[in-house]
Image (cartoon, rainbow, N blue to C red; front, top):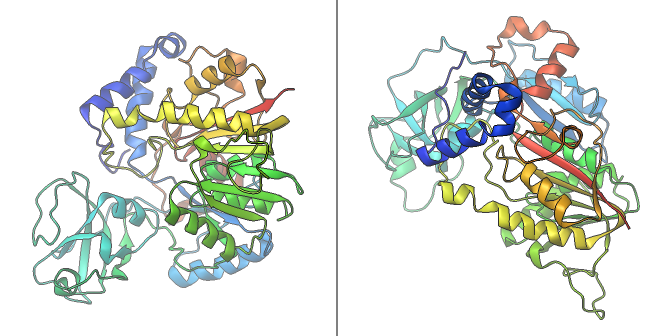
Amino acid sequence: MSFFPKIRLRKEVEDYLRHVFHNHELVAALGAEEAERRFVRLQDHLSHPPSFTTVRVNTKQTTVENVMRLLGYEIHKQFPDVVIPIHRHPQLNDLLLIPVIGPRRALQQHPIQVIVGAQCGSAVLRGAHVYSAGILSASKWMKAGDRVSVYSDIGGQCKRGATEFDGIKVFIGNGISELSRSEIFCSDGPIKGKGVRMTEPVYLSPSFDNVLPGYIFLQNLPSAVVSHVLHPRPGERVLDMCAAPGGKTTHIASLMSDQGEVIAMDKIANKVEKIKQNASVLNLRSIQAYCYNSTKAVTHDQSDNGQGPPFPPESFDRVLLDAPCSGMGQRPNMAFALSLKEVTSYQPLQRKLFSAAVSLLKPGGTLVYSTCTITLSENEEQVAWALKTFPCLQLQAQEPHIGGEGMRGAGLSPDQLKLLQRFDPSLADLCDLDVSDLTRTENDWTLQANTDTIGFFIAKFVKNS
């Protein structure tokens, strides 16, 4: 049963999505009633966090067994009264699964209120504390040390510095204020640091702030699947076209045993610095990060030495295009702000990037395309377009194949759909998890973790000669 209201969408976006999830192919296969049921479930599930926190181990620096031991100590320090198990994913051998307890429906709310933005609220639901920059409003007499209840402004209407807010808000937990109201809102400059230390979040999940730096990387399960599907090998030259903040880039380098060359590109300078920072923290030396627009990454100038972008055609053994997208698969997300024009604006950009990726890939090389969204136009329709536009491309089976098959509606054959991976949150059951449930078998945990994920899509191609 849903604990939070369904995701808030603009009416034009909700109508667009309903049409997508009631397309003729899908309705013919499922029936109109089942198609509507899945669409309603999807909206409910997107507003809730996945039932597992997933942590990738940097196997370049340490072993999975060592991290499991150290992480157990860290989690016990945060939750001394609860034994939270840590499981190793049986197919993704560098990924750990940590169950999230909740929603905790019986929490008592306090009279002193703190209102945070929707993005901050989503972070709290996945284990974060409240940082002062995310606070929009606080009760008039709030002091440091007060017990407070934290709410997420999912309507986007709260004005910064307000003393009261009666708009649309959702309770996300209780905590202890680290700062007074005046310290947050009456300072001459921006206040940094923690604003509320969460003690009773609605969803109980460990905080990973400065926990085992260099050893672990927080990463959603489907995002970790991508790099395994790409299957980079030591000594190869691999391109990550839209790489920030570097989660998949660093995973690729780790899977290559840091032997070879991993080129990471992003067109925003401060995001490139984040890639470099993550590579440095994880002690990965095979990564070279460049601030560059990947749509312009191909050059036909024979005098170019190919050391940095742009690159000559057929420069890379493998290419990952984790494309900019509408991001409609992210969880938890109680309020999606994009307009329909913005949601539908990504397809042309994705096709420009895809064309550059095909050109940069060597014959016999592997191209993986992925998004963290749920639309047809950014996923299966892009695959259908790519196969028609580039006869040299052939869809490939994916290993591991953990998600479901592709969604009908883009004219792909049943065999082609089976080669795709679509992680569909609507297929999982929303269930309350309390301490008594932590004794489930490992198989039960894995099945739940594989299905109750963010919305995600993966396609794998090989470039024939």
